[in-house]
Image 1: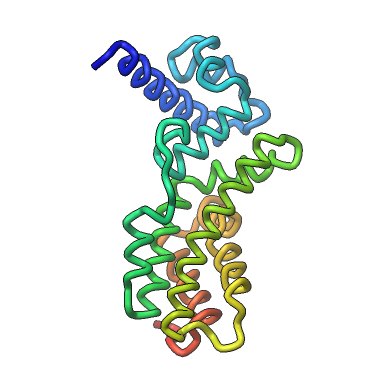
Image 2 (image 1 turned 180 degrees about the vertical axis):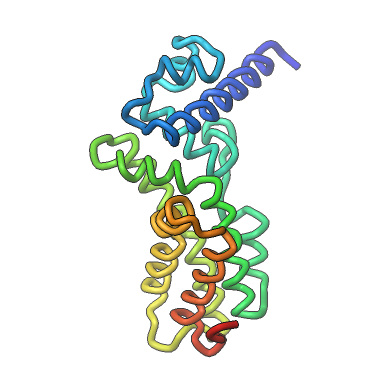
Length: 216
């Protein structure tokens, strides 16, 4: 390993430490009140190291979002949500009801990691161009994955007749977005399983009514 490789690995590890510490502080104390000094202290690094990793507090929050969704800063690993194993399983599944179930389960895992940070980014986005871009990018990526599910339902003729595919993507984006998860799970005390059952039933009724079994 070259010295350059070693520096790169140390930088990656530092960014991970900073975002882990920042995520805890942002979720506990709020994005606005949390200082970069507090982030550095919690991460066990100096303030200048934090600034070297992330020039602004908004950049730190974007890094928190990247780590929550993808497990790495976008500078360290270019990842596509569509390449994740659970997304490929959704597309490959032949049964429409199970296909929707796998999609809901995959998003339950994603939201369990990321919904709190997504909420912070969404709330702060209107006043900050960096966060606005990050929120739009995150939503675009989620919509693209929803589009793969809808395309599969269209391909085998199981999407509800008369429902436009774009509208189906809109429904998925709404129901499987961070807002319902935060309202029901993080603030309402629902279990992830209860949320998944609700989301699965609601989406079957909206997207694949022929496979909807109320009370199942």
